[in-house]
Length: 318
Image (cartoon, rainbow, N blue to C red; front, side, top):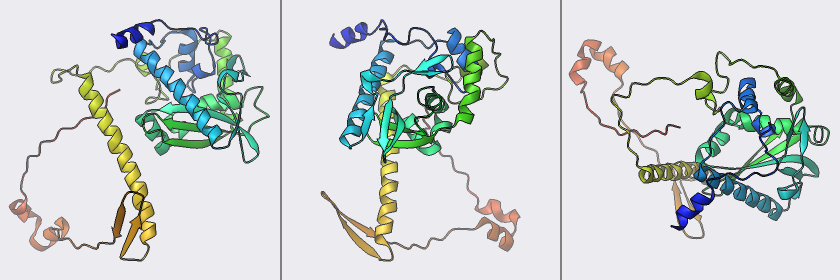
């Protein structure tokens, strides 16, 4: 009953007094057509109660990030309820704050991310993994208030489940932001933007289906099962597998450096003693090329065995 009451309380959206339906920096995309759709509200994203709860949770986690940074000794300005409003061409925005690092004041942008976006950021970098966020911070740095004040942005991310932090520094690039500000100005002034022949952001833009249409699949052999609890269990397992692999690989790299030229090294921790040992193995296998050279390709069928292997492959479809 309590859970249902909370969900019901978030069925209706609350106005924050700032995002009153107008285009802001967060609605600007590197793609002019995506920005046009946002400005015209042609493909607005529907939010149910669970979506609003997730967004609220993300805001709380971002507040924790600010607390963590202050605990680490960094000086922050214009954060929380004291956010600075900046003007970028015809639109406004509110960056998360300013941070002083090595006696220099930089822009600060914080996000809380689940395992997919978090891992993608670490593997690909901000511009490739999250071009919308890259565009957002570049526009902030090109604003009237910050253009001459900051030279870069610290993009700080907290992984929602493990609380592991990650950050990347983004240099200010006015060459990048200038044409975006120009087409945003044209859109706000009434320009019509045509749909692109090819989507420039196919994996990162939420307008892809609206823009490019829906591809028709043959679903005759596909069964659809509504089992959210099992899906969540699989996603949780994937998170632990991915995080465990990442931690294990980081540790193995460091342990290999500790081993050096020794054959065995004992590494003492608070709760365990690890033995790191160098192992050299010799394995035998049949080289197909050398077999053909020695006996001829015609004799390959004599040693080839057909095996049937059944696999269950689970992939995430978003």
